[in-house]
Image 1 (tube, rainbow, N blue to C red):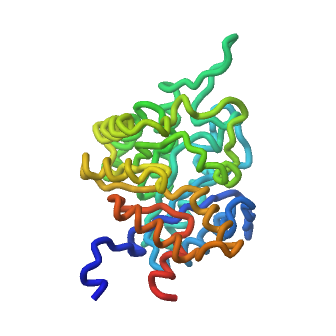
Image 2 (cartoon, rainbow, N blue to C red):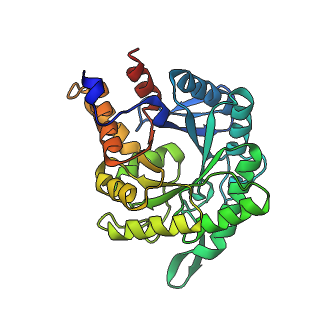
Image 3 (cartoon, rainbow, N blue to C red):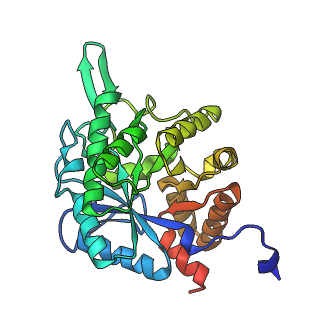
Length: 313
């Protein structure tokens, strides 16, 4: 009876599992701030993805951790970069799995920022327009490796258009772009900094990520990304921004993703480890709230566990 009248459904087919790739073989480097999450060599990443896919998770989101960083993020668009290696292996071993790749430069920059930096007597500033070329080049290299969906997360102005034009120029006209359209400068990213080894060496990212106080700005940012060619729009973080998820879905009607970020995952893990909460019940309830707000896609580090819980195993 309950299933017949239930207004909102959560199922494994709506989930995306983020994974962190780094070079090596048989490498599973634990991330202390995110229990159960690892930096993985490509062979281990395929195994992790296979287990999630078998549980019912249809897609993974790949982040890369390079061996070397530099001032132009050359590892991001290298033909044999770590993400490119992981994508090729995933598409070879798990051809039915949807592979989404994160497009950003922070993990590959020696300074940890998402764009090129110019230093002068007044300090340092992010160069928006010159960065667009590197982002487009990165996206193209991921698609050439076999990525199914491109997900730019950098928040540089105009990056969706730059990526769409470059992909179209190369003949990849049907590759969807899932834009981090409303990405807030949030304190909830803390554990991710350890996972991706991307903490800025100076300043912060507030000049290009959004003020958590601004809802109308979020709608403007989403509208711009749609105009530039985004096929899916994302709100990040999720749980503290459910009002934004709801407004984005109602305003635009576009496929909408919500990213349950690292601290959302880690806080549940920490509280559960202390016996304060039921990890399964709290995780399912929080993800259901994202669906209720209007999210069509949920990106969560708990995706494989959630898929198994929903199966009842």
